[in-house]
Length: 179
Image (tube, rainbow, N blue to C red; front, side, top):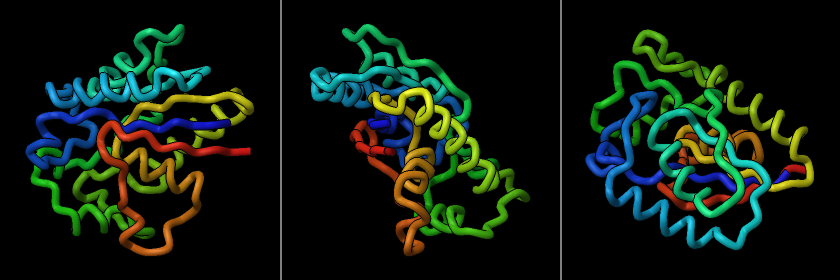
């Protein structure tokens, strides 16, 4: 399977550096423009199947990217963003965020979705897609946290703490392949 992973376009919370998590935030004008620019960039790239997070910002991005194609992105809850509990809506603190992606971190007291459960649900979808679309190209539109789980799936566990929480930028495609 070839996977084109796209993190959703910008939202107002992204622009204000607020942590979104599972809070359902729409794209802002810049995010819609990013999605349209990416649609034009990817228009000649064949896509056999598209899947999206059910959260609005990802669905909006996927709808724009898929416009003009004969496919629509199917929502799948397994690639909804990781829940960040009490920290959703708070200012994004890079150092704090990085701790949440380290093995053994327990944020359950703050309502943070356990890392192994989060990565497990993302991996279960990737395993399914790899079986169903072994020789095809899949477009996945989701979130920064999901991009971390996808990178772990294809590249293995990160080597350094800095790599553990490295997410992809808004509306910038990443290409992966599983044989």
